[in-house]
Image 1 (tube, rainbow, N blue to C red):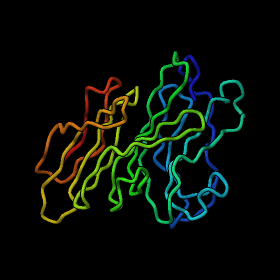
Image 2: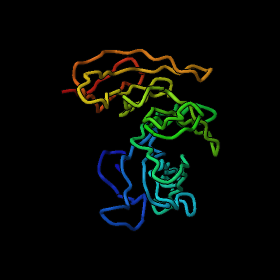
Image 3: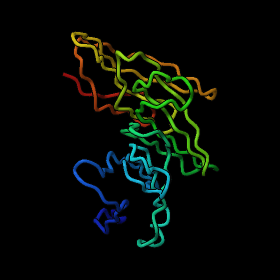
Length: 219
């Protein structure tokens, strides 16, 4: 954490777990614009009893208490709850307005799970979790066949736009694209493909705060 003058002031460890090189990972941290939440994925049972099967689940750390007490406890919430060997990865979190009466956090992530009933084939799709207090609801953003994988989501400040990459998993296929999904009040995503490529590898997506500018890497 930095002080108001920009000088480094202190470090806090968010997770504390055991493991080996074969298991025991907490990865992919993303911090909200207000600095009060950190989203990440882990295969550890960080909220005791909720991830005893060692799946890769999403977690959300609440840093709010650190503003008044640098030694305050950091609360952890397990955002996803899946079966063994599930993969929920690479969260991106929005920047809620400090003037909002109710603070809503949105997390975009990639998963092979079936949170809404629209992913029975277990393909890697993009989802959005909406977190209001202790309430968590999911929207499935993409719906593709197992010939494709969707990954590297980035989310706009208000959580309504998500950029992501789609890459082919079929040998010899050259299909790959970068798209933006807009999620309205109804919760139904509208997807606009920005560009299709002859390359098979696109990733490291970034989106502007207003959701109208997208950057990515490609080979």
